[in-house]
Length: 365
Image 1 (cartoon, rainbow, N blue to C red):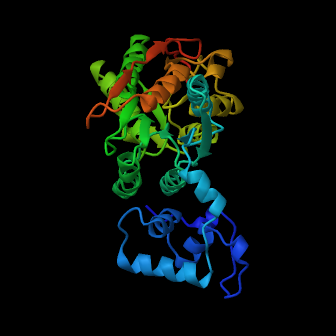
Image 2: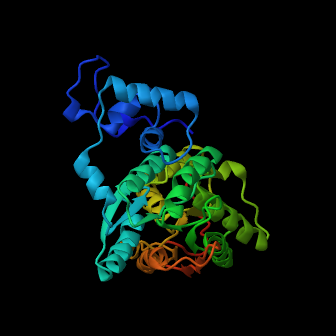
């Protein structure tokens, strides 16, 4: 995992020795020291152990820039916060927007303010935003995106969360984050994808392709693994070259479906591991003259609000997204139960719609 450079989050400064003290920020210090924003924060706040060489670089940078913490911000940080930090992967993705609706609804019932941050699925940025929320003394931090199969991310995130929790902060997450010992709302992604595969083989399909996001995301790994399991139950093997990885977005789905057609592959059914990828795939098939479901059946996962209104409506695995947001918020507000983390499992439900049908003998050429 690369170091999150603060230049991506804040303004840049010249490296000269003359600076207006009132405009020097923590981002400026981190940039000059060539460390992450989180590392600079830890050094200057003295909250956790940092390597001696990094500590010296940060202290030297702060001295050279005549950095002084904002007194007003420090006073706010010392106050009892009524703010909840919500970190998601993509605020424009309806999956996260719908979960956030549940979070804000539950927070409003307790008179709490929700601060939203979107990481663009950048692991380093997720750690940096967590550090910022710690500095703001947020009452709770919620991570509602997939976990990362990344040891560096896990170490950096735990370095932020453990002292925050010890100081009384609350943390809750959605999806599998096996490296974080925190309360979790966990959709049963593997089981839901397996059930979908069995439903599709039940329609008569034997030739499949999968459009997937990065395998480093635990949600992707679980849904792909579960789909393989469900196909195996029906005696069907998914070929590795029919698993096409692209961005976990609508445009990624479009690109993956286009690549599938470019290769000349002729599956009768395509599973996109998230609805937004399925929406992109549907557009790609339409642009290439491929009829859904006449030539290719198409299914997604999540049941975001729009998919029932598509033409044709999308087969998917439905998750109660608003309820998931409410439940993760309520977990964060509940008193800790010793050192054991709580896991609330959320089952998905296969919803067959008009985007899937029994396979036709006519396939795209």
